[in-house]
Length: 166
Image 1 (cartoon, rainbow, N blue to C red):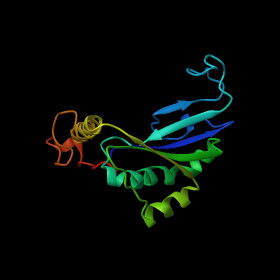
Image 2: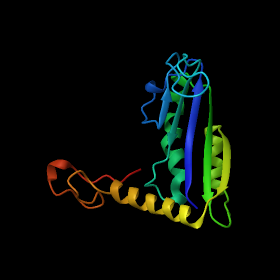
Image 3: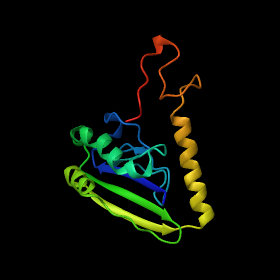
Image 4: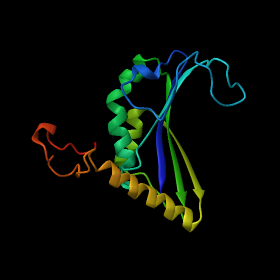
């Protein structure tokens, strides 16, 4: 069951560029809106979405999000974020069984975040395509620009030690 997991933040004075994180989407207050019925009008709030990369294994996505966001919560607040939530979109074929572990529940509480969960049915082919995309993205994420594996020591000592993805 492939999933999309994201941390969404906003606030009237929230400036996403003040948070050291690569956002999937960000909108500064006052910037022209790029979509929707108010397209072209200035945004009344700042907002951002950070999504867990596809290379992260399904079973580790929720913990990955927590470890990425929790250390930055004070910076989100300092940047003006007043509200946030976690969104989980789960695609499934035939049946969707999912549960949150006690550790995950505690993490969500520490983030003081609502969790918005959506499950939607897809065909077997669509589910297979989603898993294939994740495997391809994971292989690409484990390669350095020179084509060597990020899991192996670098071929050139000046490159430094291999650092696994968080």
